[in-house]
Length: 173
Image 1: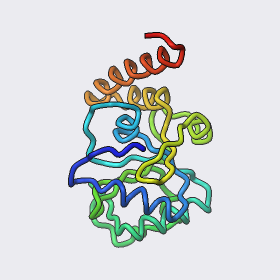
Image 2 (image 1 turned 135 degrees about the vertical axis):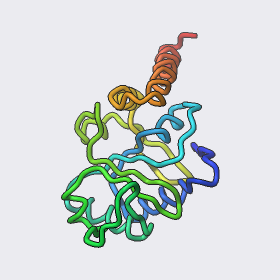
Image 3 (image 1 turned 180 degrees about the horizontal axis):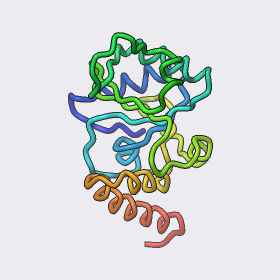
Image 4 (image 1 turned 45 degrees about the horizontal axis):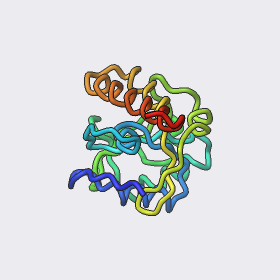
């Protein structure tokens, strides 16, 4: 079981538990996916790709409502509702909650289609909950496309981890 220690700013266990309870179809990406793959880079938010079909939009909206999220880095908008219709009208959202920062993405730079990423994802366990995690190769593509200094640093580390994993799978030292 993978149990990343993220400190007091992110209550990842409760976020994962809430998504699981609502049967949201999602894939972990970003820093948490990096940690799952063996990265030592710290992260302070939870990033997921989510399926964009109507049923999953309803499930995600219900989970977000339970988490009492508010949009981060956006002016207060009394017309914005956390519901399936608003999620369908957008794609990528950054939220704040009492549990920490939570980003949901329908699309990320460097990303293949959701189904292709899901097919290559790994099924991991976080606190007893099954969680799909983007493959290390998909994560490298997304981090390269993001191009921020912190992403460039993580790419180098992830490439080294991927090479070690491939050697180990072949029985090489």
